[in-house]
Image (cartoon, rainbow, N blue to C red; front, side, top):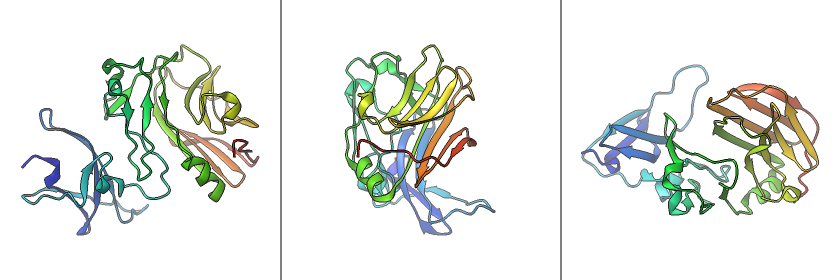
Length: 238
């Protein structure tokens, strides 16, 4: 069988939950996410994948299914893989919170592009955007005083002031922003701008991550720490 429902993933004989992002039998291509019981920092964690003759919908499902949502624990407020056709109008959230995004109606099927790993959206830097209205993020920060925001992105750097992720279309109401401007990348709230002059390489995929934890603010590009401050961020929108 080739259907993803017959897939089983195990680590040390322990069955694992699986989210199927892409399952393309015509091109022998799949992108899946597996929740492993634990991962060692010293030795490799081996994940055994098998296609059997037993349907496994208890542990395996596509984005939005109950099995797939089990891959992401309570700390994940929203996860987006950008695999849906943007012309359909919805960007699915993988988590239990179902913070699905509403795609701006200017985006078309041509804006769904192959990034070499999975799929991505091609934003024009003008009026393409995803509206992900939710209060879960505000509630989570208020309860934990922590936040991690990350993205995998590529910019042609043709427009300064480009925003990758923000919590509001109104600058006055923003308390989370990952941005690029004038050769800098940064992690921002309205009262606190944390940035670095390390430039992004043009037309290159980068992994950007900003964290805030009880007064410590850090920013990483491609898993390299480029900014570390102890200045607290004031989340004014709360």
